[in-house]
Length: 212
Image (cartoon, rainbow, N blue to C red; front, top):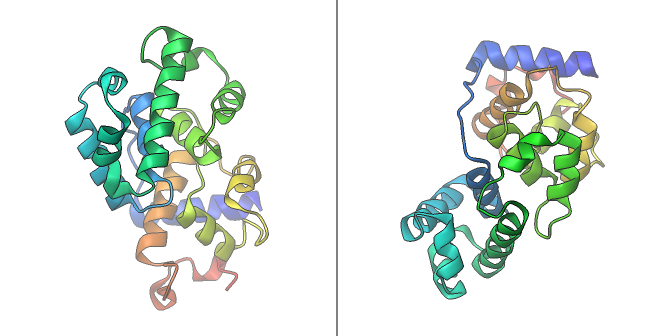
């Protein structure tokens, strides 16, 4: 199975290239990923832009009414629930560090971070792995809906494995140092070719690896 994942990684890189890593603040990644829950990237990005436009500093949220946060992130859906989560998580960070910074995570192993962040309400494996990969530069592999769907069609994620369990399943299969490349390229492939509805099998360059 590891050989198959490596082959898929190489084929995706030949077609799409190797994505460049961009630096991002771990808190920004954390909030963006919370906003991405149960919505698409367009709505997430719109909600995030509105949130930062209304609250340029994360500390500003401490002074805000929940209703103002809800209104800012409404385009992302589940605004009430997400507003409460964001407030609770920022308060937790403040208690841990004495300021709004996740810098203390850099002193922890990835396993410790998974356990620590994963214990917080509203933070699942995908959110934690996004923080690890995009916010901390760790070799972690987030599994979103595109990755899960494509992984099952290509046969390296079992059909009965859900998104949460898929993180542990994929961890030993992803080639070392290729988490960012495979994650982003699978998403690109899932959006353009291996769509949820009407997959473009006639133009698929991974057809030889497909289990459909």
